[in-house]
Length: 171
Image (cartoon, rainbow, N blue to C red; front, side, top):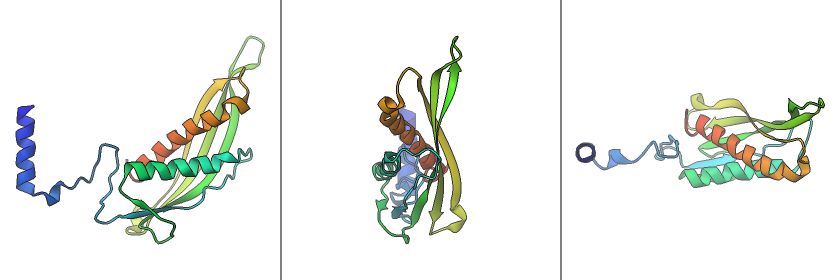
């Protein structure tokens, strides 16, 4: 441990304080804050056959909050931001997963898919068009209306993590 401290101290003094501005953080972001200062979000309309109206707002708020909490990027309302994310919710689907003795489903899966267009206005070669899916299973003895909000919140968190890692985390 002491050896690691000495090596880090030498690296800091050798490279200077300017070189110690973190580019990679513990949250997984790999953002050069000297280049990227702003991000904007377009709407993510629901284009799925089955529609749960609160999902759009839930997803958009989750994405915006995550970026604000885990980066130093300033969220602005402009297409001219350094970075931009927009897209659509492409799937909201229920499917049976496990069948009981009576041939009825005992588990149901809620799957949500999104398409994200990540636009890097500083370096267009880093722009991406990606799709993501996440799901949660719940007991078929529960009514969807009773568990829907919680399931959607959990799935939106998973989707936000996936999107963050594939774009700002550059994984």
